[in-house]
Image (cartoon, rainbow, N blue to C red; front, top):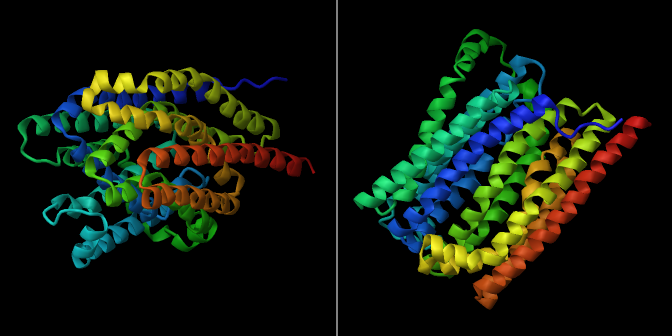
Length: 426
């Protein structure tokens, strides 16, 4: 019997998240033509360096334990995981603050940052807000509160856009993009916390029953395998900005980061909504031999098919779109985008089904594959940036290698699903 790809509840959750994600991603797209006329490519370059540093540190700040919050059946176990992730997050933020204060001159030299750049000191704040948001996000995924998650994304996006434009027009600070992003995170955290107050009550009445050792012993594989894998994955995604900031001028970093951001926005409309609901759905049917295989395969093929026309259109007209919509000086960003589009096409579906490794307990092998993938991508980046000193060639080979490694991973996701089915049959 043919199993429908999307059941009614699954479809409802996807559409709920996708609606909020679509609005949240549409807002920065709509205000981008304004922002490119208020901020220079150099300022976009500084902002991308800030977000890259935050992203790389954030992914290890919770040990990735927050992704395990939806997994246990026992509510107390889920609460223990939440608190363990929160405690680790606070510790990492304090540690990062101390490191910045002590090693400030060396860090400024490494990232080619001016000594007067105050934004470097608010990196721990951004990490803290990101971590709290993701912890509460996964708590709400556990209870299928996708409506709140959807609204929080819209609030964050609208807040960021509002403050970015206001600060850009006022010219009060040259780092308006950074300030806007911090305030957007703050407002989204406050909203999602207002709908997660039961956590405080649960802690209050169950604090004596919290068993960190039990949940750590059960889910330490996430810290050992998933966290390093996620770290290297994020590092490989952000290392272009980190390297470009050192070896190229800020305007080139700005062109790259803007093209990267614009391509990521529409991709996230699908991936972020699908990934969260896909993870929940796959976890629910992991004991159903037929349905889980069908879910993984159909998700891959459907997303590749649906997204293909969009990526082809952007590939053909990228330079014209960027120069007309964002201003003539941003045509260079359109050229950079042309080289990045194939990478984003395959990464779109890869980001959705990547959580299959957690459900099937394949974090160790996934980590090893990710290490090989990162080694290839970083080697290409170093070759193009440090040795060739040619950003166009760097982007071309970086995108090509990323495509090949992602396609390999897609085949692997299918193979572990089928292999687990065979093992169950035995």
